Length: 234
Image (cartoon, rainbow, N blue to C red; front, top):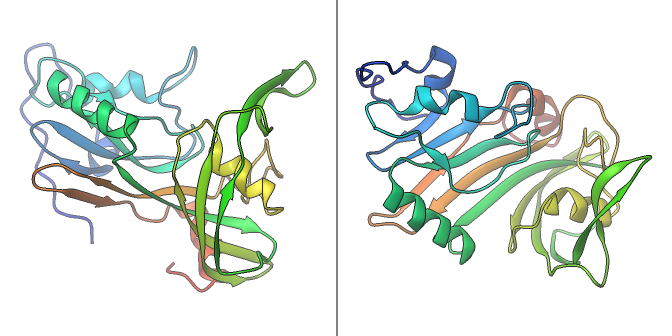
């Protein structure tokens, strides 16, 4: 059950309050950081169009500065996004992510029946670009080191529900590694087949603070049917 959250603080003069949909997506509100359940389809930043950065002033909630994301999530990935509310905490969070001290668990639904129960993909990645397909990431021996652990949580309906733990943080790492296994993430328009939305959720984040903080995001609507078909919660 999602914890009861405090109401937004009284806005400072000239400050706007968070709209209802945004406040409902706050998984954790602390004096120095926030954890937001980012909706799928909303980029963190964008050159044009709606993006989370446009809503950051509404998340000040009494602070003098906008909160800032401490890490990245793809636009089409839903789930836990950590934001620092103060400059010292943002610096600390950035260091924790850079040092790989933050625990990150993802849920994904893959196309097809993945053999085995668990394993590790150790496949370096590099960025490539072409006029026909635009930019993307690919497995290449000359790329940057990238490792992802996986564990099967359920199967059904010609799909596999997995838990993923990235040991590194390369762009599109989990999406490329799943495709490299021969089972792209359901709804992936770049490394698989589009349709129904990307079935990738930043399910849990664990921060080694004092006290330690562990936050979990619920399953988004577009993933519920596929996870249920694999024996998971609806």
